[in-house]
Length: 493
Image 1 (cartoon, rainbow, N blue to C red):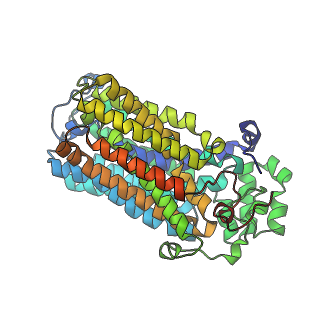
Image 2: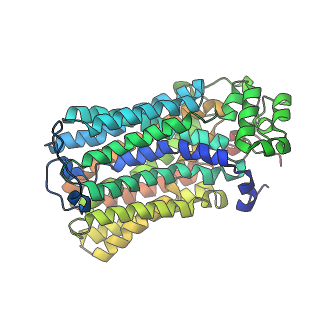
Image 3: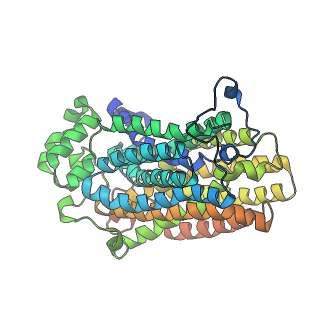
Protein backbone atom coordinates (compact mmCIF):
# COMPACT_ATOMS: atom_id res chain seq x y z
CA UNK A 1 0.00 0.00 0.00
CA UNK A 2 1.48 3.34 -0.99
CA UNK A 3 2.33 5.97 1.58
CA UNK A 4 2.19 9.73 1.19
CA UNK A 5 5.58 11.19 0.46
CA UNK A 6 7.31 13.15 3.16
CA UNK A 7 7.58 16.93 2.73
CA UNK A 8 11.34 16.68 2.22
CA UNK A 9 10.70 14.43 -0.78
CA UNK A 10 8.07 16.42 -2.63
CA UNK A 11 9.65 19.80 -1.93
CA UNK A 12 12.17 18.89 -4.61
CA UNK A 13 9.32 19.02 -7.14
CA UNK A 14 8.55 22.65 -6.35
CA UNK A 15 10.02 25.18 -8.76
CA UNK A 16 9.90 28.99 -8.74
CA UNK A 17 7.59 28.96 -11.75
CA UNK A 18 5.18 26.57 -10.02
CA UNK A 19 5.04 28.94 -7.04
CA UNK A 20 4.48 31.82 -9.46
CA UNK A 21 1.49 30.04 -11.04
CA UNK A 22 0.00 29.13 -7.68
CA UNK A 23 0.47 32.66 -6.31
CA UNK A 24 -1.39 34.37 -9.15
CA UNK A 25 -4.04 31.67 -9.51
CA UNK A 26 -4.96 31.83 -5.82
CA UNK A 27 -5.63 35.56 -6.06
CA UNK A 28 -9.05 34.39 -7.28
CA UNK A 29 -9.97 32.70 -3.96
CA UNK A 30 -8.43 35.73 -2.21
CA UNK A 31 -11.02 37.87 -3.98
CA UNK A 32 -13.75 35.50 -2.80
CA UNK A 33 -12.77 36.00 0.83
CA UNK A 34 -12.21 39.72 0.37
CA UNK A 35 -15.67 40.41 -1.07
CA UNK A 36 -17.34 38.02 1.36
CA UNK A 37 -16.24 40.12 4.36
CA UNK A 38 -15.65 43.58 2.88
CA UNK A 39 -18.95 45.09 4.13
CA UNK A 40 -18.76 43.68 7.67
CA UNK A 41 -16.68 46.34 9.42
CA UNK A 42 -17.50 49.42 7.24
CA UNK A 43 -21.26 48.86 7.43
CA UNK A 44 -22.03 51.78 9.72
CA UNK A 45 -19.88 54.23 7.77
CA UNK A 46 -21.36 53.07 4.49
CA UNK A 47 -24.93 53.40 5.73
CA UNK A 48 -24.43 56.86 7.28
CA UNK A 49 -24.57 55.50 10.82
CA UNK A 50 -22.08 56.28 13.57
CA UNK A 51 -19.04 54.07 13.94
CA UNK A 52 -16.70 53.38 16.83
CA UNK A 53 -14.01 51.87 14.62
CA UNK A 54 -10.50 53.17 15.30
CA UNK A 55 -9.70 55.76 12.60
CA UNK A 56 -6.12 56.90 13.01
CA UNK A 57 -5.78 57.85 9.34
CA UNK A 58 -8.67 60.32 9.40
CA UNK A 59 -6.30 62.89 10.87
CA UNK A 60 -4.03 62.66 7.83
CA UNK A 61 -6.55 62.27 5.00
CA UNK A 62 -9.50 64.16 3.62
CA UNK A 63 -12.88 62.58 2.99
CA UNK A 64 -14.22 65.29 0.70
CA UNK A 65 -15.16 63.90 -2.68
CA UNK A 66 -17.49 66.40 -4.41
CA UNK A 67 -18.73 63.99 -7.06
CA UNK A 68 -19.62 61.18 -4.65
CA UNK A 69 -21.70 61.12 -1.48
CA UNK A 70 -19.87 60.46 1.76
CA UNK A 71 -22.21 57.58 2.54
CA UNK A 72 -25.31 55.85 1.22
CA UNK A 73 -28.43 55.96 3.44
CA UNK A 74 -29.38 52.34 2.84
CA UNK A 75 -32.25 50.69 4.61
CA UNK A 76 -31.74 47.32 6.25
CA UNK A 77 -33.44 45.65 3.28
CA UNK A 78 -31.25 47.49 0.77
CA UNK A 79 -28.08 46.69 2.66
CA UNK A 80 -29.14 43.06 2.86
CA UNK A 81 -29.56 43.01 -0.91
CA UNK A 82 -26.15 44.64 -1.44
CA UNK A 83 -24.58 42.00 0.81
CA UNK A 84 -26.31 38.88 -0.49
CA UNK A 85 -26.26 39.73 -4.22
CA UNK A 86 -22.58 38.80 -4.21
CA UNK A 87 -23.50 35.18 -3.46
CA UNK A 88 -26.05 35.08 -6.29
CA UNK A 89 -23.41 36.29 -8.71
CA UNK A 90 -21.10 33.67 -7.28
CA UNK A 91 -23.68 30.97 -7.91
CA UNK A 92 -24.04 31.93 -11.56
CA UNK A 93 -20.26 32.16 -11.95
CA UNK A 94 -19.78 28.74 -10.39
CA UNK A 95 -22.31 27.11 -12.70
CA UNK A 96 -20.77 28.73 -15.79
CA UNK A 97 -17.11 28.15 -15.00
CA UNK A 98 -17.12 24.35 -15.00
CA UNK A 99 -18.25 23.84 -18.60
CA UNK A 100 -16.07 26.73 -19.76
CA UNK A 101 -12.98 25.30 -18.07
CA UNK A 102 -13.68 21.88 -19.58
CA UNK A 103 -14.17 23.27 -23.08
CA UNK A 104 -11.65 26.14 -23.19
CA UNK A 105 -9.08 25.25 -20.55
CA UNK A 106 -8.32 26.32 -16.99
CA UNK A 107 -6.47 29.51 -17.90
CA UNK A 108 -9.07 31.43 -19.94
CA UNK A 109 -11.74 31.43 -17.19
CA UNK A 110 -9.18 32.75 -14.69
CA UNK A 111 -8.28 35.62 -17.01
CA UNK A 112 -11.96 36.45 -17.49
CA UNK A 113 -12.49 36.58 -13.73
CA UNK A 114 -9.94 39.39 -13.43
CA UNK A 115 -12.14 41.53 -15.67
CA UNK A 116 -15.05 40.91 -13.31
CA UNK A 117 -12.93 41.79 -10.29
CA UNK A 118 -11.76 45.10 -11.75
CA UNK A 119 -15.13 46.23 -13.12
CA UNK A 120 -17.11 45.03 -10.09
CA UNK A 121 -14.80 46.75 -7.60
CA UNK A 122 -14.82 50.03 -9.52
CA UNK A 123 -18.63 50.10 -9.75
CA UNK A 124 -18.94 49.37 -6.02
CA UNK A 125 -16.31 51.87 -4.93
CA UNK A 126 -17.62 54.68 -7.14
CA UNK A 127 -21.33 53.98 -6.72
CA UNK A 128 -23.49 57.02 -5.87
CA UNK A 129 -26.46 54.79 -5.03
CA UNK A 130 -27.42 51.29 -4.02
CA UNK A 131 -28.22 50.33 -7.62
CA UNK A 132 -24.66 50.56 -8.92
CA UNK A 133 -23.30 48.91 -5.80
CA UNK A 134 -25.66 45.96 -6.30
CA UNK A 135 -24.50 45.65 -9.92
CA UNK A 136 -20.85 45.90 -8.90
CA UNK A 137 -21.19 43.30 -6.16
CA UNK A 138 -23.00 40.96 -8.55
CA UNK A 139 -20.20 41.25 -11.14
CA UNK A 140 -17.58 40.65 -8.45
CA UNK A 141 -19.57 37.59 -7.42
CA UNK A 142 -19.45 36.25 -10.97
CA UNK A 143 -15.66 36.38 -10.88
CA UNK A 144 -15.37 34.95 -7.38
CA UNK A 145 -17.73 32.07 -8.13
CA UNK A 146 -15.84 31.15 -11.28
CA UNK A 147 -12.50 31.38 -9.48
CA UNK A 148 -13.57 29.03 -6.71
CA UNK A 149 -14.42 26.44 -9.38
CA UNK A 150 -11.45 26.75 -11.72
CA UNK A 151 -8.55 27.52 -9.37
CA UNK A 152 -8.75 24.31 -7.27
CA UNK A 153 -8.83 22.27 -10.49
CA UNK A 154 -5.86 24.13 -11.94
CA UNK A 155 -3.78 23.79 -8.77
CA UNK A 156 -4.62 20.09 -8.45
CA UNK A 157 -3.44 19.49 -12.01
CA UNK A 158 -0.13 21.38 -11.74
CA UNK A 159 0.84 20.44 -8.16
CA UNK A 160 3.22 17.55 -7.33
CA UNK A 161 1.01 14.44 -6.96
CA UNK A 162 2.34 13.69 -3.45
CA UNK A 163 1.44 17.18 -2.21
CA UNK A 164 -1.99 17.78 -3.73
CA UNK A 165 -3.56 18.08 -0.28
CA UNK A 166 -1.11 20.72 0.89
CA UNK A 167 -1.33 22.71 -2.34
CA UNK A 168 -5.10 22.32 -2.42
CA UNK A 169 -5.30 23.93 1.01
CA UNK A 170 -3.94 27.13 -0.52
CA UNK A 171 -7.41 27.83 -1.91
CA UNK A 172 -8.83 28.21 1.59
CA UNK A 173 -5.67 29.85 2.91
CA UNK A 174 -5.90 32.61 0.32
CA UNK A 175 -9.62 32.97 1.00
CA UNK A 176 -8.68 33.62 4.61
CA UNK A 177 -5.98 36.07 3.53
CA UNK A 178 -8.63 38.00 1.62
CA UNK A 179 -10.92 38.03 4.66
CA UNK A 180 -8.11 39.26 6.90
CA UNK A 181 -7.01 42.01 4.48
CA UNK A 182 -10.49 43.48 4.23
CA UNK A 183 -11.02 43.26 8.00
CA UNK A 184 -7.80 45.15 8.70
CA UNK A 185 -8.56 47.78 6.06
CA UNK A 186 -12.10 48.15 7.36
CA UNK A 187 -10.83 48.58 10.92
CA UNK A 188 -8.80 51.64 9.90
CA UNK A 189 -10.92 53.05 7.05
CA UNK A 190 -14.50 52.86 8.33
CA UNK A 191 -15.13 56.60 8.43
CA UNK A 192 -16.29 59.29 6.02
CA UNK A 193 -16.12 57.97 2.47
CA UNK A 194 -12.86 56.12 3.07
CA UNK A 195 -14.87 52.91 3.01
CA UNK A 196 -14.72 53.32 -0.78
CA UNK A 197 -11.00 52.55 -0.62
CA UNK A 198 -11.79 49.20 1.01
CA UNK A 199 -13.97 48.33 -1.99
CA UNK A 200 -11.51 49.73 -4.55
CA UNK A 201 -8.54 47.68 -3.32
CA UNK A 202 -10.15 44.55 -4.77
CA UNK A 203 -9.95 46.13 -8.22
CA UNK A 204 -6.23 46.80 -7.80
CA UNK A 205 -5.68 43.17 -6.81
CA UNK A 206 -7.62 42.06 -9.89
CA UNK A 207 -5.45 44.20 -12.14
CA UNK A 208 -2.26 42.71 -10.68
CA UNK A 209 -3.63 39.20 -11.18
CA UNK A 210 -4.57 39.97 -14.79
CA UNK A 211 -0.97 40.96 -15.57
CA UNK A 212 0.45 37.92 -13.77
CA UNK A 213 -1.76 35.46 -15.62
CA UNK A 214 -0.47 36.72 -18.97
CA UNK A 215 2.67 34.69 -18.31
CA UNK A 216 0.93 31.54 -17.03
CA UNK A 217 0.69 28.21 -18.87
CA UNK A 218 -2.31 26.00 -19.43
CA UNK A 219 -2.83 22.89 -17.33
CA UNK A 220 -0.79 20.02 -18.85
CA UNK A 221 -3.46 17.56 -17.79
CA UNK A 222 -6.18 19.47 -19.66
CA UNK A 223 -3.97 19.73 -22.74
CA UNK A 224 -3.36 15.97 -22.60
CA UNK A 225 -7.08 15.30 -22.31
CA UNK A 226 -7.54 17.32 -25.50
CA UNK A 227 -4.90 15.26 -27.29
CA UNK A 228 -2.27 18.01 -27.40
CA UNK A 229 0.63 15.88 -26.18
CA UNK A 230 3.30 18.28 -27.41
CA UNK A 231 1.72 21.28 -25.71
CA UNK A 232 1.19 19.29 -22.53
CA UNK A 233 4.82 18.15 -22.50
CA UNK A 234 6.08 21.71 -22.96
CA UNK A 235 3.82 23.07 -20.21
CA UNK A 236 4.77 20.25 -17.86
CA UNK A 237 8.49 20.76 -18.52
CA UNK A 238 8.17 24.49 -17.85
CA UNK A 239 6.31 23.91 -14.57
CA UNK A 240 8.84 21.34 -13.39
CA UNK A 241 11.82 23.31 -14.69
CA UNK A 242 13.99 22.51 -17.71
CA UNK A 243 16.53 20.73 -15.50
CA UNK A 244 13.89 18.35 -14.20
CA UNK A 245 12.24 17.65 -17.52
CA UNK A 246 15.04 15.36 -18.73
CA UNK A 247 15.12 13.47 -15.42
CA UNK A 248 11.42 12.74 -15.59
CA UNK A 249 11.41 12.05 -19.34
CA UNK A 250 8.45 14.36 -19.74
CA UNK A 251 8.69 14.91 -23.45
CA UNK A 252 9.57 11.29 -24.29
CA UNK A 253 6.68 9.91 -22.27
CA UNK A 254 4.36 12.51 -23.78
CA UNK A 255 5.14 11.36 -27.30
CA UNK A 256 5.04 7.65 -26.48
CA UNK A 257 1.98 7.58 -24.23
CA UNK A 258 0.12 10.81 -24.89
CA UNK A 259 -3.21 9.40 -23.74
CA UNK A 260 -1.99 8.50 -20.22
CA UNK A 261 -1.69 11.37 -17.78
CA UNK A 262 0.84 9.76 -15.51
CA UNK A 263 3.21 9.06 -18.38
CA UNK A 264 2.66 12.44 -19.96
CA UNK A 265 3.38 14.30 -16.75
CA UNK A 266 6.18 12.04 -15.58
CA UNK A 267 4.31 10.90 -12.48
CA UNK A 268 2.89 7.47 -11.59
CA UNK A 269 0.24 9.03 -9.39
CA UNK A 270 -1.92 10.86 -11.91
CA UNK A 271 -5.60 10.72 -11.27
CA UNK A 272 -6.74 9.06 -14.47
CA UNK A 273 -5.17 5.97 -15.98
CA UNK A 274 -7.60 5.73 -18.91
CA UNK A 275 -6.84 7.10 -22.36
CA UNK A 276 -8.09 10.66 -22.33
CA UNK A 277 -9.20 10.56 -25.93
CA UNK A 278 -11.70 7.78 -25.22
CA UNK A 279 -13.58 9.85 -22.65
CA UNK A 280 -15.56 12.83 -23.97
CA UNK A 281 -16.28 15.74 -21.68
CA UNK A 282 -19.34 15.37 -19.47
CA UNK A 283 -21.77 18.26 -18.98
CA UNK A 284 -23.53 19.54 -15.87
CA UNK A 285 -26.80 17.71 -16.46
CA UNK A 286 -25.23 14.56 -17.81
CA UNK A 287 -22.87 14.10 -14.86
CA UNK A 288 -25.69 13.71 -12.32
CA UNK A 289 -27.15 10.85 -14.41
CA UNK A 290 -23.85 9.17 -15.21
CA UNK A 291 -23.50 5.78 -13.44
CA UNK A 292 -19.83 6.42 -12.62
CA UNK A 293 -20.23 9.98 -11.35
CA UNK A 294 -23.59 10.56 -9.67
CA UNK A 295 -22.30 9.32 -6.30
CA UNK A 296 -19.39 11.76 -6.53
CA UNK A 297 -21.85 14.60 -7.11
CA UNK A 298 -23.78 13.64 -3.97
CA UNK A 299 -20.53 13.39 -1.99
CA UNK A 300 -19.07 16.77 -2.97
CA UNK A 301 -22.42 18.54 -2.55
CA UNK A 302 -22.76 17.07 0.94
CA UNK A 303 -19.29 18.21 1.93
CA UNK A 304 -19.83 21.68 0.48
CA UNK A 305 -23.15 22.06 2.30
CA UNK A 306 -21.45 20.97 5.50
CA UNK A 307 -18.78 23.62 5.00
CA UNK A 308 -21.37 26.40 5.09
CA UNK A 309 -24.32 25.03 7.08
CA UNK A 310 -22.16 24.21 10.09
CA UNK A 311 -22.14 27.98 10.56
CA UNK A 312 -18.70 29.39 9.76
CA UNK A 313 -20.03 32.48 7.96
CA UNK A 314 -22.13 33.42 10.96
CA UNK A 315 -18.77 34.28 12.52
CA UNK A 316 -17.00 35.62 9.42
CA UNK A 317 -19.88 37.92 8.42
CA UNK A 318 -21.57 38.75 11.72
CA UNK A 319 -19.00 38.38 14.50
CA UNK A 320 -19.16 42.10 15.34
CA UNK A 321 -22.92 42.24 15.86
CA UNK A 322 -23.04 38.76 17.40
CA UNK A 323 -20.56 39.47 20.19
CA UNK A 324 -20.93 43.24 20.55
CA UNK A 325 -23.24 42.94 23.56
CA UNK A 326 -20.72 40.81 25.43
CA UNK A 327 -17.63 42.77 24.36
CA UNK A 328 -18.92 46.16 23.19
CA UNK A 329 -15.55 47.95 22.99
CA UNK A 330 -13.64 45.29 21.10
CA UNK A 331 -15.91 44.34 18.18
CA UNK A 332 -13.46 45.40 15.48
CA UNK A 333 -10.52 43.71 17.17
CA UNK A 334 -12.53 40.52 17.59
CA UNK A 335 -13.13 40.46 13.85
CA UNK A 336 -9.41 40.81 13.13
CA UNK A 337 -8.52 38.18 15.74
CA UNK A 338 -10.92 35.70 14.13
CA UNK A 339 -9.39 36.42 10.72
CA UNK A 340 -5.84 35.90 12.00
CA UNK A 341 -6.77 32.64 13.75
CA UNK A 342 -8.58 31.34 10.69
CA UNK A 343 -5.53 32.01 8.52
CA UNK A 344 -2.93 30.63 10.95
CA UNK A 345 -4.95 27.52 11.76
CA UNK A 346 -5.58 26.78 8.07
CA UNK A 347 -1.86 27.02 7.29
CA UNK A 348 -0.92 24.88 10.29
CA UNK A 349 -3.47 22.19 9.44
CA UNK A 350 -2.81 22.12 5.67
CA UNK A 351 -0.41 19.12 5.72
CA UNK A 352 -2.84 17.00 7.74
CA UNK A 353 -4.99 16.18 4.69
CA UNK A 354 -2.08 14.20 3.22
CA UNK A 355 -1.16 12.59 6.54
CA UNK A 356 -4.49 11.73 8.17
CA UNK A 357 -6.66 11.58 5.08
CA UNK A 358 -9.33 13.89 3.67
CA UNK A 359 -12.31 12.16 5.23
CA UNK A 360 -10.75 11.90 8.70
CA UNK A 361 -9.93 15.60 8.77
CA UNK A 362 -13.45 16.55 7.63
CA UNK A 363 -15.10 14.40 10.32
CA UNK A 364 -12.87 15.80 13.08
CA UNK A 365 -13.62 19.30 11.82
CA UNK A 366 -17.39 18.78 11.83
CA UNK A 367 -17.30 17.25 15.31
CA UNK A 368 -15.30 20.19 16.64
CA UNK A 369 -17.65 22.74 15.11
CA UNK A 370 -20.69 20.91 16.47
CA UNK A 371 -19.36 20.79 20.04
CA UNK A 372 -18.27 24.42 19.97
CA UNK A 373 -21.62 25.48 18.51
CA UNK A 374 -23.20 24.18 21.71
CA UNK A 375 -20.61 25.92 23.88
CA UNK A 376 -21.06 29.18 21.98
CA UNK A 377 -24.84 28.97 22.33
CA UNK A 378 -24.59 28.52 26.10
CA UNK A 379 -21.94 31.24 26.39
CA UNK A 380 -24.07 33.82 24.58
CA UNK A 381 -27.36 32.83 26.22
CA UNK A 382 -25.93 32.99 29.76
CA UNK A 383 -23.57 35.92 28.99
CA UNK A 384 -20.40 34.01 29.87
CA UNK A 385 -17.74 36.13 28.15
CA UNK A 386 -14.84 33.71 28.57
CA UNK A 387 -16.83 30.71 27.30
CA UNK A 388 -18.15 32.68 24.33
CA UNK A 389 -14.68 33.89 23.38
CA UNK A 390 -13.01 30.49 23.69
CA UNK A 391 -15.85 28.71 21.87
CA UNK A 392 -15.65 31.22 19.01
CA UNK A 393 -11.92 30.67 18.59
CA UNK A 394 -12.21 26.86 18.79
CA UNK A 395 -15.14 26.97 16.37
CA UNK A 396 -13.00 28.77 13.79
CA UNK A 397 -9.99 26.52 14.47
CA UNK A 398 -12.15 23.42 13.97
CA UNK A 399 -13.31 24.76 10.62
CA UNK A 400 -9.71 25.35 9.54
CA UNK A 401 -8.77 21.76 10.46
CA UNK A 402 -10.76 20.20 7.63
CA UNK A 403 -13.95 21.82 6.38
CA UNK A 404 -12.07 24.92 5.27
CA UNK A 405 -9.56 23.60 2.73
CA UNK A 406 -10.51 20.01 1.91
CA UNK A 407 -13.89 20.40 0.13
CA UNK A 408 -12.12 22.33 -2.64
CA UNK A 409 -9.81 19.37 -3.26
CA UNK A 410 -12.38 16.60 -3.56
CA UNK A 411 -13.94 17.34 -6.95
CA UNK A 412 -10.72 16.55 -8.78
CA UNK A 413 -10.19 13.36 -6.77
CA UNK A 414 -13.65 11.78 -6.90
CA UNK A 415 -14.09 11.89 -10.70
CA UNK A 416 -11.95 11.66 -13.82
CA UNK A 417 -10.72 14.72 -15.74
CA UNK A 418 -13.64 14.54 -18.15
CA UNK A 419 -16.12 15.26 -15.33
CA UNK A 420 -14.10 17.54 -13.04
CA UNK A 421 -15.50 20.79 -14.41
CA UNK A 422 -19.13 19.74 -14.15
CA UNK A 423 -18.62 18.21 -10.70
CA UNK A 424 -16.90 21.32 -9.39
CA UNK A 425 -19.73 23.47 -10.70
CA UNK A 426 -22.34 21.43 -8.84
CA UNK A 427 -20.24 21.49 -5.69
CA UNK A 428 -19.68 25.23 -5.77
CA UNK A 429 -23.31 25.89 -6.69
CA UNK A 430 -24.29 24.08 -3.50
CA UNK A 431 -21.67 26.02 -1.58
CA UNK A 432 -22.83 29.41 -2.85
CA UNK A 433 -26.48 28.55 -2.25
CA UNK A 434 -25.72 27.56 1.34
CA UNK A 435 -23.64 30.74 1.78
CA UNK A 436 -26.62 32.79 0.65
CA UNK A 437 -28.93 30.98 3.06
CA UNK A 438 -26.64 31.67 6.02
CA UNK A 439 -25.97 35.28 4.99
CA UNK A 440 -29.64 36.06 4.48
CA UNK A 441 -31.31 34.17 7.32
CA UNK A 442 -28.80 34.02 10.18
CA UNK A 443 -29.60 37.57 11.42
CA UNK A 444 -33.33 36.87 11.15
CA UNK A 445 -33.16 33.57 13.06
CA UNK A 446 -30.76 34.95 15.63
CA UNK A 447 -33.15 37.79 16.40
CA UNK A 448 -36.31 35.66 16.29
CA UNK A 449 -34.96 32.83 18.46
CA UNK A 450 -32.97 34.98 20.84
CA UNK A 451 -29.24 35.62 20.64
CA UNK A 452 -27.17 32.48 20.56
CA UNK A 453 -29.93 29.89 20.22
CA UNK A 454 -29.45 29.57 16.48
CA UNK A 455 -26.22 27.71 17.25
CA UNK A 456 -28.29 24.77 18.46
CA UNK A 457 -29.43 24.48 14.84
CA UNK A 458 -25.82 24.52 13.64
CA UNK A 459 -24.95 21.81 16.19
CA UNK A 460 -27.83 19.62 14.95
CA UNK A 461 -26.76 20.11 11.33
CA UNK A 462 -23.19 19.19 12.26
CA UNK A 463 -24.45 15.89 13.69
CA UNK A 464 -26.41 15.12 10.50
CA UNK A 465 -23.43 15.89 8.27
CA UNK A 466 -21.05 13.89 10.48
CA UNK A 467 -23.21 10.78 10.17
CA UNK A 468 -23.87 11.12 6.43
CA UNK A 469 -20.29 11.91 5.41
CA UNK A 470 -18.94 9.17 7.65
CA UNK A 471 -21.23 6.67 5.93
CA UNK A 472 -21.25 7.82 2.29
CA UNK A 473 -18.11 9.77 1.35
CA UNK A 474 -15.02 7.64 0.51
CA UNK A 475 -11.42 8.37 1.43
CA UNK A 476 -9.27 9.63 -1.46
CA UNK A 477 -5.83 9.81 0.15
CA UNK A 478 -3.18 7.78 -1.75
CA UNK A 479 -5.73 6.63 -4.34
CA UNK A 480 -4.51 6.73 -7.93
CA UNK A 481 -7.80 7.18 -9.76
CA UNK A 482 -11.48 7.84 -9.28
CA UNK A 483 -12.16 4.19 -10.17
CA UNK A 484 -10.01 3.09 -7.26
CA UNK A 485 -11.66 5.60 -4.91
CA UNK A 486 -15.10 4.14 -5.65
CA UNK A 487 -13.90 0.51 -5.81
CA UNK A 488 -14.35 0.08 -9.54
CA UNK A 489 -10.83 -1.31 -9.98
CA UNK A 490 -8.22 -2.97 -7.89
CA UNK A 491 -5.12 -1.09 -6.87
CA UNK A 492 -1.96 -1.91 -8.76
CA UNK A 493 0.99 -1.11 -6.48
